[in-house]
Image 1 (cartoon, rainbow, N blue to C red):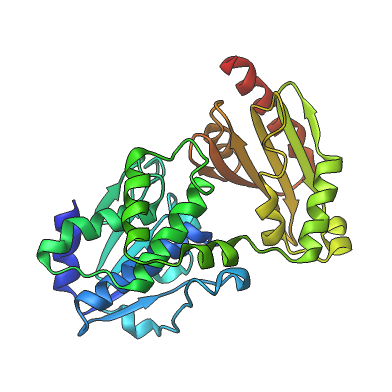
Image 2 (cartoon, rainbow, N blue to C red):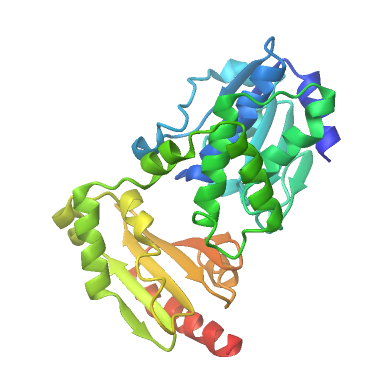
Amino acid sequence: MKLQILNAIKQYETIIIHRHIRPDPDALGSQGALAELIKESFPEKKVYCVGEEDEALTFLNRMDDVRDAEYEGALVIVCDTANEPRISDHRYKMGDMLIKIDHHPNDDQYGDIMWVDTSASAVSEMIYEFYHFGKEHGLKLNDKAASLIYAGIIGDTGRFLFSNTTEKTFRYASEIVSSGLDFTAIYDELYKRRIELIHLNGYVLQNFTFEDHVGVMKIPMEVLKKFNVSPSEASLLVNAFSDAEGLKAWVFFIEENDQIRVRFRSKGPIVNTIANQFNGGGHPLAAGATIYSWDDVDEIVQQLKEACRIES
């Protein structure tokens, strides 16, 4: 599969790389690192990154302004996106060939070439694996690509604390750090928080509910406005009470202008099957969904409690 992808990259002059909406460090890390690999290795090619930006993460990578005409005869690659509706920038189908690179369960099988590895801690880890494979075929890793890969890995592994962290994850991270990467600067940027968000974190710790091994936090719009925090910033607090004794799974409900964002996390019970029922998906232990009424909250919480009961 990696050889097919490399051959496709060599074949096309224009390559446009997408990732999922509401980008996180792995989405931006894998997208940007792949772009840097290609640029460094094949400087004659035109390589673009597209999608909406999150102001808090623009230090990682900025997006390009790409005209529709650029998609004609182009190779399009989508990173870190399990389902087509979650691909940022709907023009991903306008190219000549489509490649999917992902580590979520492959429920939505789109693309002419699909490289899906659910054992990978992050798609950024897969991009580093792609570099390892391609070194003998001309792939080169520059400092920016290394930095983006590291940021993506620590983002999706929770700084190597999550269960998706493997021996290979540590080995790759060690190789990147040994190359001279200033990893402390990445940590400083990724984990700095505005005072308003720190205050909201205190509110979360005081107001989440905990019953039958399930933690629940609801953040309506009025709370976001009170603390002057955006929904995307509030989502960063999803692990605020993850170390609570007896906790097996938890869920955040964060109200946006036209929907309620749902974020699941788990220490064992499978949660992506619940997310699938509510316009979402993801990993077995970390998933997201979307609802449009607070009336759906009780059903989600009950299903989460049942998942914890089954796991016991």
